[in-house]
Image 1: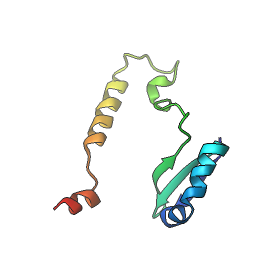
Image 2: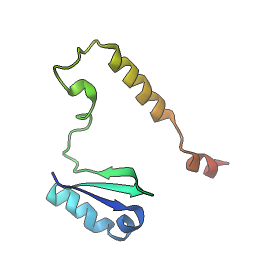
Image 3: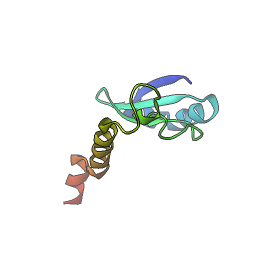
Image 4: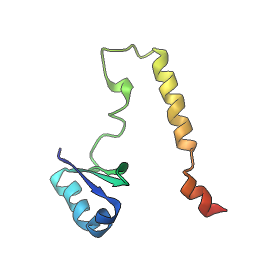
Length: 90
């Protein structure tokens, strides 16, 4: 799978082309804002959750407290509202 990156402005200009690359050429495209990754476009057949640490076998037991802590962090991140969205509400 090819991996390429674009800034937000360039991604907006080439959005249709980027979607085609993802869908038909199996590319993975990172969109960044001010040099920091903001989003990743991936083909729909890519397995979700495959990157979770619990999927890696052999280095930790599934019952290790590490996974409980990671899951707590992920739950808090899902509840997090970015400042830009908070300012639009009020």
